[in-house]
Amino acid sequence: MPAPLEKIELSENVSIIGRSLKDIEKYGSRGTAYIGKVLMSAGEKPVLGRKIAMDIAKAHLVLICGKRGGGKSYSLAVLLEEFARLDPDVKARTTVICIDTVGIFWSLKIPNKENISELAEWDLKPEGTPVRILVPKGKIDFYKEKGVPVDGSFTIKASELEAIEWMALFKLTWRDPEGVLITRIIETLKEKIGTYYGTEEIITAIKKDTESEALAKQSLINRIKVAQSWGLIEKEGTRIREIAKPGAITIVDVSAYRQAIGIEGTKDIIVALLGKKLFEERMLYRKEEEMKLIKGEKKESSMPVVWMFIDEAHMFMPKDEDNIALKVLLEWVRVGRQPGLSLCLATQRPERLHPDAVSQCDLFISHRLTSQPDITAVSALRPSYMHQDFDKYYAEMPKSKGYAIILDDNTEKIWMVKIRPRYSWDAGTDASAFID
Ligand SMILES: Nc1ncnc2c1ncn2[C@@H]1O[C@H](COP(=O)(O)OP(=O)(O)OP(=O)(O)O)[C@@H](O)[C@H]1O
Ligand SMILES: [Mg+2]
Image 1 (cartoon, rainbow, N blue to C red):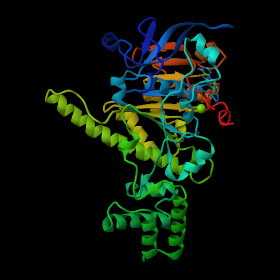
Image 2 (tube, rainbow, N blue to C red):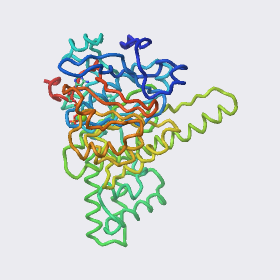
Image 3 (tube, protein in one colour):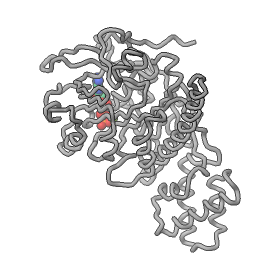
Image 4 (cartoon, rainbow, N blue to C red):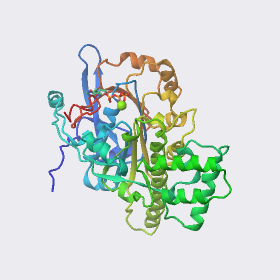
């Protein structure tokens, strides 16, 4: 049995955000994340006051924004650390999935060796956080070479990809002969084989097709062969229950797909399918939970409430482009809270993010922003309880790292906060520092 993780006692001198007064009276600070302290006065030596804890027991839509290097990924990591430190009963009903496009969150496992003195100022000690690192099956070597401590791999079941998703992967449209062909092939395979087919069966079916031109067939076969090199799409896929385990914090590291041009679509498809499956499962279990409540039984189901963390969220939820993950994530944004689906999004460019993600968030955490279009975009979401201009808040924000404005729709309050230092190592500064 591992020793329990360090946890700050929050009973006194704490302000809770994201939680109604009624719930604060009922639950106190249980099921909250200790994220930082209130800034009392700015200036040369900023003075910090009360602790700030954020509700993570209920469903939320959290948006973290800020300019490059402003502390977004760092704040995401602080939140992830807090999920690991939830009381066991709350934790057991929660699962966290973090989509890591950059390959930085694996270092949560490693204690923070850099900022020991800063941690001490906050009465904290360096400590690793147990997270599960899952990587695409065919890319394990990529991660091993980088020294990433991988815990497992995942694959996508080929038959779970609809024709439209194959088209998105290959950037095909209905006007392309390959788009028409893949649609016919998928239909044929579903009819003839059912759900147990892989890329080899797809290639065989393309070869057998009699309606398409040789050129379109060859071009599609080439694309499927490229897809085979991704090491992602197989006959057997990883079950969603394996990915979304109760009480677990799972980092889905897709950074292997970052470098090469032409495979950007793979991470989109991973997010789209994960989002879709989690949504379906939660809807199903929500019904089961309600039935139990109606019968007077205890509310309990094996599918935990889900938090999905997405750094660089503008990649998946762009404003002006189409993205296969966008539709799914918008569904989470619009109706996810009722079935217990929370999103925690981070972006450098709120202006490029789909406006629904900006306007629907109930917890808005903004590190320093300097680009005027971004400030204008977030100002548009400014709720009526904000009587001052955003520019003024940004101007008052201390220049050093980790400060943020937090707008809390639940209590209709605005806070200027310093995010606490991490217990764990920050691979964001220099990814090679630990490995060397
Ligand atoms: N709360 C904090 N306390 C101490 N240092 C911090 C804090 N937040 C950020 N930093 C420092 O700032 C650096 C940059 O932060 P981070 O990588 O989170 O920025 P980012 O907003 O994600 O940037 P990018 O847009 O480039 O991804 C961190 O590596 C860390 O050194
Ligand atoms: Mg970042």
